[in-house]
Amino acid sequence: MTEPRNILLIFVDSLRADHLGCYGYHRPTSPNIDRLAGEGAVFERFFAPSVPTQPSFTTVYTGQYSLTHGVVSHKGGAQGDNDLKPGTPWFPALLRQSGFLTASFDCLPRYKSWFVHGFEFLVDSTFPGPDDGYSCERLNSRVLPWLRTHSDERFFAAIHYWDPHTPYLPPERYRHFYEGDPTDPARNTLAPLADQYFSLMWRKWFEKLPPGM
Image 1 (cartoon, rainbow, N blue to C red):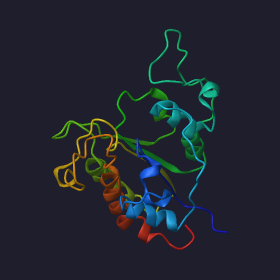
Image 2: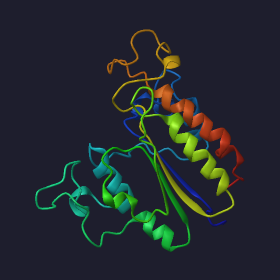
Image 3: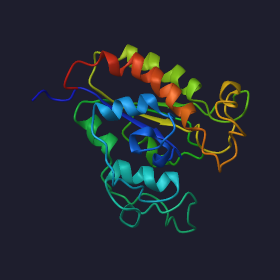
Image 4: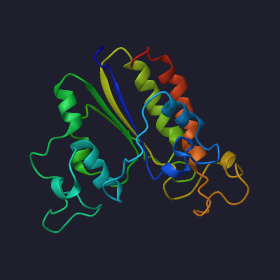
């Protein structure tokens, strides 16, 4: 079996699984994510360990529950009781020690210090945009050139998209994708926004991978 050359970890914050086609949703909100799911594995009992982003992300990178690694909310405690416990194993750092080039592309506000651990490249895309919200487009403008530049290297890249998260400020072309107000949380119509930029990632990266990778 060929040793994996690259690991590309993509997070989409606040994107509901029950509104993706690969999980049975009846509207065509996510054709590109569905395509990737059709060529890989889909986990039907995969649940976030915490509601807030930062405890959940810490769990992804440590393999531990929040009460084990010590990060249980976004806010710090008066006695440092919401910080990553010293000595906790950290996945990106282990990969870097194993010879992987490591990179993180994110627009997470109030970034905690431990999220930079193990990453040789850290790209923060929280710079202001026309809507002062988040932007897959801006993030991809950083991600795709990096992937092209380092395509011949063994790397781990973590990419964190935020667009389905509040504030609900979709680009103009998505505001009439469905009938009604797409910013109404009851309508759950922001999934196509994330999928459109996943399509770009697919064309620029996944289609070029050799079989078995």
